[in-house]
Length: 180
Image (cartoon, rainbow, N blue to C red; front, top):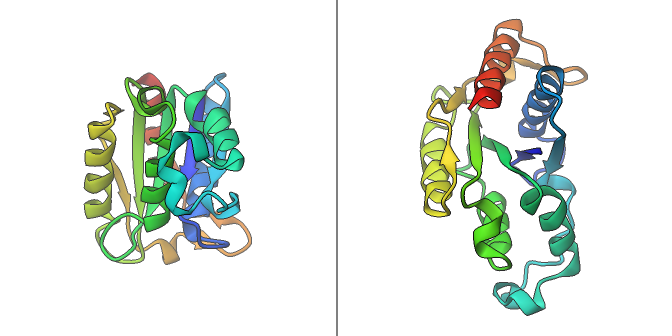
């Protein structure tokens, strides 16, 4: 199973639009099960000081972890640029999942990284930071990290990602990840 994670908890984010497009492209190119996890739609009742105790983990987080993280063999992280890095919600989510069944979550699994930003660098620093985090957890990261810049020019409010060159770029990236 492949889990595509939209790494922002901001409602109606551009990040989710790109994650949905990547999700669709994966579904077109593989028979593997593909799921989409949007951090904006998950409950946040697990964010409390005792979250670092596996015995006190919120049931809602355990359910998400079981369905989207533990069951996955591969991950695609679509990551918005927040202050030159990854969204805090994404880092917090990875930290929270790492409490219960630490090794089973990410170790030995594979990940692809896609950065989205309104600026010129496509969240390159955030992609490098996320790669470092995942490598620390034992995840093998596809070397071809995909930054996407000036995303405001590539999307339509109603249709999502509409720029054909960007869609083809994502299609090629998804194919390389399937083969990875």
